[in-house]
Length: 230
Image 1 (tube, rainbow, N blue to C red):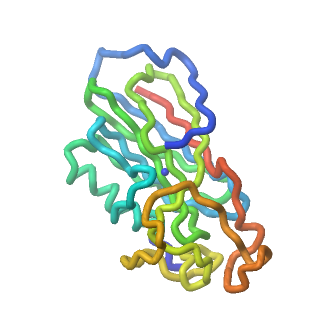
Image 2 (image 1 turned 90 degrees about the vertical axis):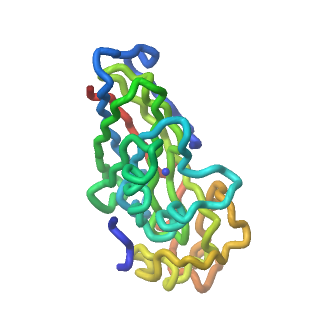
């Protein structure tokens, strides 16, 4: 398997506690982020979670994907995003999950911020049995959470628009294909981030596909719960 082990549209948001209250006793705020895989047979790459101020964006709908997003969406490689904590002054913290999240399983990461300014969170992960599909919560405000408050968001699947959805074994990095991950050549004619239209599979007539009906997915494909712990 050649997957590198190095997430805007929310269909449901549930708030607990008092989301508009602030704890100004300290600039330090800590959060846990739990991502749950809701698919049938689409493992998720290690979670990418980034806390930042207003001058940062994971991606823009209808615009070309960045190289960082292309790497994540094609191979699960989130190393560029994790490094942004050191290279981008607008990024307050950036962490990676421990490993692959299997269907029905979850992973939790923790982030820390030290600012009283508006703070946002982005979460992303690749569906590894796709060409360039990924789940994401692109810009969730978290600085309004009081200690103990939680937000739960359902995540849909996006297409980075960087690789044609051929579904061949040579281009699927997950266990369904064990093929190539990131390729700098962009052969998808749309070259923009859009909602993913889903996989076709051999059972729907794509004879060259390495996928079958178990790899199909419906939205939402994942759930993320954000809790302020300090």
